[in-house]
Every structure is written in structure tokens, then in C-alpha cells.
Length: 172
Image 1 (tube, helix red, strand yellow):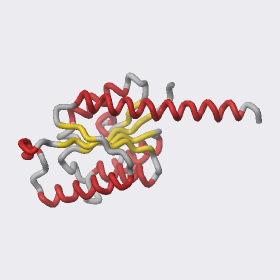
Image 2 (spheres, rainbow, N blue to C red):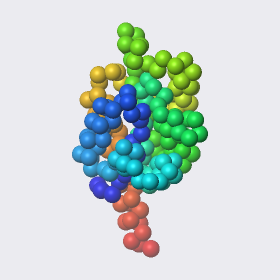
Image 3 (cartoon, one colour):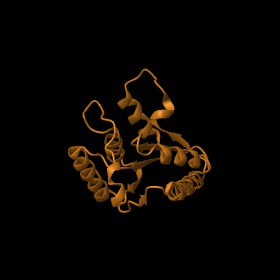
Image 4 (cartoon, one colour):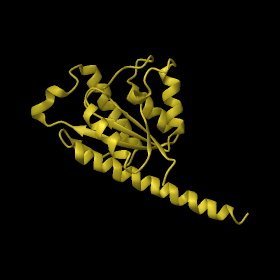
């Protein structure tokens, strides 16, 4: 199985460790991973670049933490822009939400408006996607295993569909 690409999106500061581990583990499938920090400064506007990568990807992975993230030029967090675009393009979207125990609530965005918007976004995602797994702070390995399992399963299904289509095309 080769030639598949996924786009990985998350807030950077609160999910840096998880994002790095997921990215490294996806290489075991193997699959190409597209994400903003791998591109460096290309000199291009970010929005068209990200949309192009999402268009190119076979699936999109979204990790949601407790911060709304860096705002795009439109004033919306980049992760939300990316997820909404993936939904609009009918891309297969895998979403994982990190939960924080009550005793560590100080890690949650203290800006009440940002927190409200993040909660609204999570509700929006849950309405669009049937299964949104949760993982706890400190469960980086569990998250990585879930992502690799889910993406591998999906890409194997894609591969089987492509092989069947190729087989049927050989008769025409």
C-alpha cells in the first residue's frame, strides 16, 4: 500500500508532543503526511497552500486540544478552517479530542470567548462525524495507536476499492 497522503491538523502549542508522535507513527503505515510545520516558509499565502494539501490528501486527521489555536486572516482558528474545508470537500475526516481532568483545568484556554467557540466547534464536529474518540492528557501512545489503526484501516479499504476498480477496468 503506497501513494496515499493524509493531512494532519491540530493546534500546535498544546498538542505538539501528540502531533509529533502521530506524525512519526504514520510513517509506519506508510503514508505521506502533510502538515503546516513541515513546509517551512514557502513564501505563499497559507490558506491556498493548506487547501491544496487537503485537496491532495486521501484523508484528514484533526487533533483537538483545549486551545482554539492560532487565528487565520479571517479571524477563525486555522484548525477550524481546515476541518470545515475538509468537510466541505467531503474528505474522510478523523477527529480526536483530548480531555483534561478537572484538577488540570488551568491548561484550558482561559479566554472565555475562545473557550466557548472551541466548545461550539467540537459540537459542530460531533454532529458531522459519527465517532469522535476522546483521549486523556498523558495518553499520547493511546492516541497514536487509535490514529494509526483508523487511518490504516481506511487506507486498506481505499486500496481494495482501487484494486477492484482496476480489475474491472481490465475487462473494458
